[in-house]
Image (cartoon, rainbow, N blue to C red; front, side, top):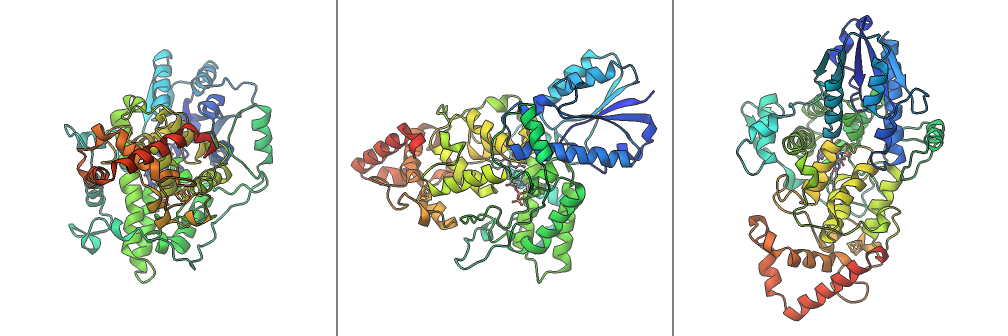
Length: 510
Ligand code: FAD
Ligand code: SF4
């Protein structure tokens, strides 16, 4: 009798050592679970990307002679949750053991542990063989320390894995070139056209409708553009290296009207689903740089590698060090509901209309839009982090809790009080105007703090610092804020706060 081996939708690793074993020794179970499709309201493109990637992966396994039990969403035998589907399959008495790969999500980890405790067959867990680090490496590295510094983790990773190293020193003499990676886009600059795949997914769109899966966002069923196979992921990586990498650094934080992906790689879905391995992404980028130093520049290459070798691994480590408590943290005690326009993009604020609009269109926004447009607004407006998390977890194609919550609740909302970031990421219109061309087409006036058409960011910014003085005034990274606020004319501050409160009272109308 074979063992039953479960593969989750984000465990599509073609190079896992399981696939080197005798195909007759186990059966693979893959489930399109209704529970997974609805534990939060996902973007329609996200659900479809995962189901497509799972279907393609199952086909690949079958082509390698593995025995695959694929439970489709509308399969009469589909029991709903992953655990219930495993239970149902084990009831057939065909198996000697149950094996699963360690999930990346706390929720599924708990559910599979519970399942394992409840069955009589021997159960074994295996690593997904995807990340550079284990679940506990970050926690162990920072044991006893109050703050977990990404930069020191990242430097250790560079040394340990010999990435961008010149002997014992960092290539080029510096570990981090972030300061060089903050240019705004010159006016005449033409951004490269985003690479799109083209697939007719009408059948899956109909399936979701028939099964009454509630989703958000828009889709063109005849032109699904995301990569969902390993070879498409590799083509996307090739495109990134050839067409985007040399500009990635300079314009990493830049935003432009109607340019939805700029020079970003859009590899997060393929990596998070494990179709691409972070090591191969980093190795290919590093190799391209070493082979052609005229075309590529170190700040771009280092900046890109830091996101994956540094931030991505570090966020996962924080997640496992701090869950489940992390999901309930609300340092500022923020309680407001998310404005209605987060769900339809209908706001007069051009920056938000662009960032939310493209998220609805493509299930994607790049990092600085997530952090400094939508996240910035949510934090300034005091939105409940539970609501903010649910929105981010639902809307983005790459959103899986381990990397979503640490970025949203942690980096963006500072709801963890400073575990991930050392200060809240907030700004007034000044920063948004510097990094984008959004303000020039906006209903609001970027220069005004109060009065008609004053940009909401300008008053909300000071209102945020004013109401959280107790919690923030001793933050060493915010040294400039309170002296500036205290030097401002008292009457003027009053006016700004009144303006902010008026905006907050009518937040849905902004
Ligand atoms: P690129 O800019 O091309 O970067 C390359 C890769 O680096 C990404 O694919 C990603 O794997 C990694 N990376 C970059 N920044 C981060 C980061 N801060 N944390 C972890 N990995 C990073 N990323 C997700 O994968 N899933 C999420 O749900 C998610 N939610 C986010 C929520 C907020 C509020 C913020 C501020 C960031 C979030 N990020 C998330 C991180 C980052 O914004 C995305 O990884 C990135 O935008 C994905 O697009 P890309 O592949 O084009 O990235
Ligand atoms: Fe956004 Fe204000 Fe600029 Fe309008 S003026 S785009 S609301 S920052």
